[in-house]
Image 1: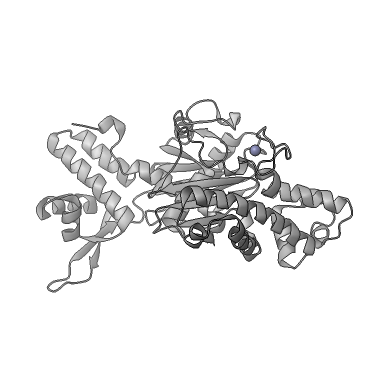
Image 2: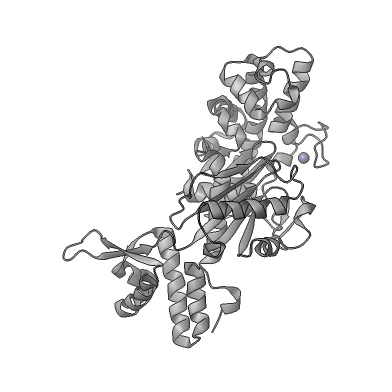
Length: 416
Ligand SMILES: [Zn+2]
């Protein structure tokens, strides 16, 4: 059991106009506690527009059931110090799952968004697992067991996936192994708990907006630069999906007319000149032609072992060739960023994904090249910064995906 199921079940057991009101208030309180932390009764009265007696009655019920705790006295504004109420950190859990092309990450979070232990990484993903769904089912059960959590204590599963997702139908256009139906329905069936799917880069910008550098920003763009290049968009404080859910395909804007063929079918996309995949491919081609670089030593001359991070590490050690590769990619990225600055006028552009590990090596070039490509006022008013969440932004982004769907009235219990 968890707090959400408890609130829903206790209403279903005793349906009346009065108990519906109580049900709405309980959900509202849970939402306030989760988002804002501990509160005094007087604050809750203001926020929920309820009297002290009715609020006290509901809080007592939730406290007796163990979902809410009285955390003792808070700050006094003269007179007696008020008691503070808040969620029991173990009133429910979120299972966050990040599914990538070649890895998956899982973690369980409590009501304070604290991870129960380290995240679990599996080195198989959509492109490399024989049966991705079976693998996820097995690994999530294993994780539940190791953290001593029952599946029924999980309020929801938050799942992030790459590729094109049609938000209207909830289906993936990129990964047929996930089935042809609605992803939320499919994962809900798989895990036996409510499940919510979001696009990987979009959930990363949510992670930044809830837990990272974008916490107090309303207009933010997040660039996920790794094997591909994607963009998450927050406008006026809300995640922007676009008409069909395909917004943010930043990697496929054209950079080179008649350039290299991209896997999307078009030519000269940003990804064909600046993605991790492209940088690695260029490095291998040049080294095989005889270019000298410490990159070869780092992989003991096994070219297939070169990854973006290998090149970043070499660049950090001053390797000229690796530095050139990153600089060239950064210039194209800067050109791309200048376009989005002019279109969106964001407060910040946050750079995340594996490329962010290059830190100043890419940031300096991007900032400098923006002087060349962007209008002065737009550039001046926009911070170009690196994500501080590193590999965690995807997993953390899965939390708001669940939470924005869960402390709300379920569809079958709306109206009255
Ligand atoms: Zn493309």
